[in-house]
Image (cartoon, rainbow, N blue to C red; front, side, top):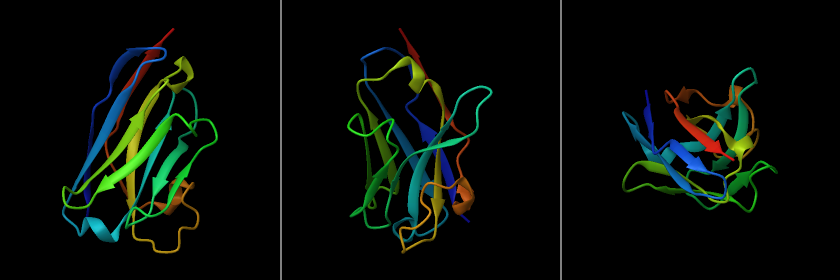
Length: 126
């Protein structure tokens, strides 16, 4: 059983940056592929970024490609989401998620992830 705790959310003006962190406990972190998702009010939860268990493969939604960077530090049991050039449409609750996977497939599906954090709010004002 893996527990995930996100932090780093907040309010920022358009064009600004934030770095989200997700600390994992209760499992062997390096054996889990990790993902970030977000959910705006009235909308479905959507994929943002994912990273393989070893960090060698990363995946991004088209809407954040070139602006967001996902990374992980297996020694610290933490995955990060560096968000630059933020836009008002990035406003959402951001969730990290974990799954045991070595194939890299279906990384964009919420149903592919077994463990979820409680979320951290990001608000971008224009």
